[in-house]
Length: 618
Image 1 (cartoon, rainbow, N blue to C red):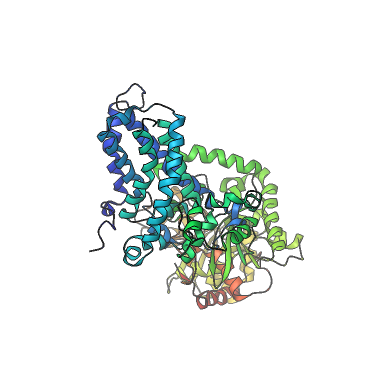
Image 2 (spheres, rainbow, N blue to C red):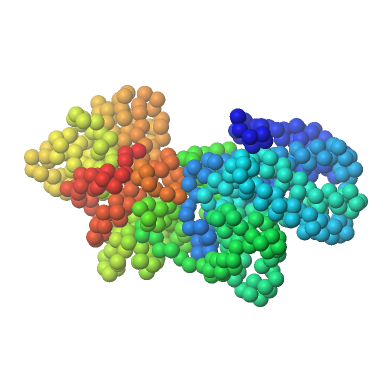
């Protein structure tokens, strides 16, 4: 057994812990507590405060992950990985606890249910007691929690998070939260006891407390450097995110709640606090070695982002009731991005000491098929490539429709237009082809291939025919088929067969989908067929008597650091093969671009290089 009050009593409930709020919610609904005249109006106010507090931490979390806005002022420049996200998953335990503590106080003291709306005197009393009681008592408590057994039993959990996030503020043991709850209640309770309490005081003090606490853990310096130069005394009145980060880094200084004055008085103020604050507020940009340039798949998938919700983004994308309800709002953002946005940084990770970033072209999948949008999309991609080139990025890999043949010739357009590019442009399709080919079982004699004349389709067909595998290539263009067939060795050309209808594959149990298959088209496949695919979005799993492969993907090496986002529908640590292909290009130090047609002779070479660098089949 662990130390007393070190764990939460509802740990085993998981997300069902929110049912603990059910009695209050039921009482509020049953009594129509949202009506001011209701005698149970206090239930509604408690639940409203609970929601506003959760929103405060979440909005700070959103701000923290807006790398396109604040990456220059990030304090600790490492990503939050899946381990920390899972560890802090139930960061809001303290909100549930404090909701019930507040409800118990209202039951114990009925007069608190009828507080006036506003009393300025109560605010003055609360501020005085915050400075005179809450701040010094928290300072003493915090120092005590850093000693011996108290630290290991009750406070080390909070310090186990590597990167500070707003959610880290609530990640603590039950005893620590009970103590903080008591200190937090002192100013408001005293004002109410003096008959000076008000609803505005309860809401205002609580939300201000949460706001400053979440800000202190946000890992982004929000205070400008000139502020403490212009008003030197201000540095002792408010703890900056840098100030609190120093505490988590060294654990032997900067113990205060919000006011460094008490560290000054206690002799625990770190001498480097203001110097580091000035440096972080000035900001600096770290140059990535590799960039993966993606686009938004659809409106639903656009919400699969660590900006929207880091918890949701840490799991493979899927539609949920919440994302369905938020679709109208996401649609408005889509129109706004279409009109005003430009390519932005979404997330990053580190590998072998190098920075790898994912940038997003603010366009959704359907927009790539609008004739009038083609030039605008290419302009966005071109600007991103030129920006990466100017920054000194080594490799930029194009994802999905950003390398569409009809759009820009698989990136050839940009290489031709800008022959002096230093950044190496990569489509990653060589490794994508290798992954798909490795999924086809040994001994397969025949395959049916759609999207057969695309870059990937061509490479797969040419590779398989060399292995004496009969490839039925679905294409309406005799000319494009003949051109591909002539690229094959003379003795292998007979294995490439042009077909024009899905009916031709009624006896073939290995389908490779390079073009989206409708349920009706899938019906032509015989029972037991396995659908391999390299099409986005993935083929709908319509046939119960068939099996479906996932999109071509590879697992990143085990030494990847700071990765906390799942790439679309893929699992944790798994990336699309074109992403992995760009990583291999970077790690191998290949010279030149990889655009246009796939060099079939390099498929095995790139596959072996990927394995050598620790990438593995997903």
